[in-house]
Length: 180
Image (cartoon, rainbow, N blue to C red; front, side, top):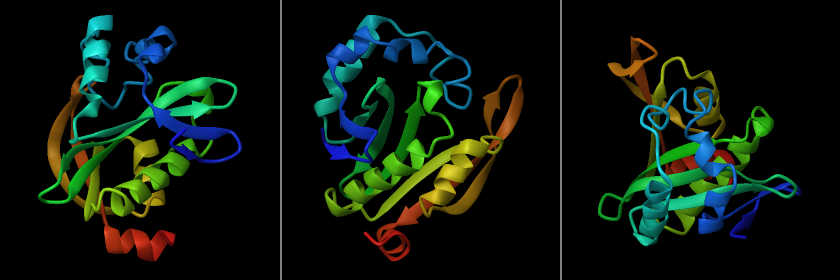
């Protein structure tokens, strides 16, 4: 366990054993992948193994989100970490739909921001989402992120062009707003 988030949830490193569970099937679930590119091109077991082998690189942090009874339910990451610019992109995939709308994203998101600012010495963490992804917009706001801009018609989603909203938070804002 890397961090305990609550009595029911914790995060740990992503492991090869996760490939034997429901993890790979999340990338085939069109509801889970509705607002990302994962469900557009299907992945083989060798793809996931290669991804796991690359997790030791220092340009990303990937945690398995776990429930004490249900096990591995999602992933959260800081990716595109720039040690020069001290920035990273936040991403989350909650694959087990039984845990949607239960505040798990906020718990794990705030903990990952704290880790990024306090352990990795980052100065800015950002994320992007489609303009119609209400869940991610709520999560970005709950994590104290600011809407920084719009990339017009940036995504092709379900047959239409959709704007991308860009959110970000600075270390000083995180410490001021969330007490870390």
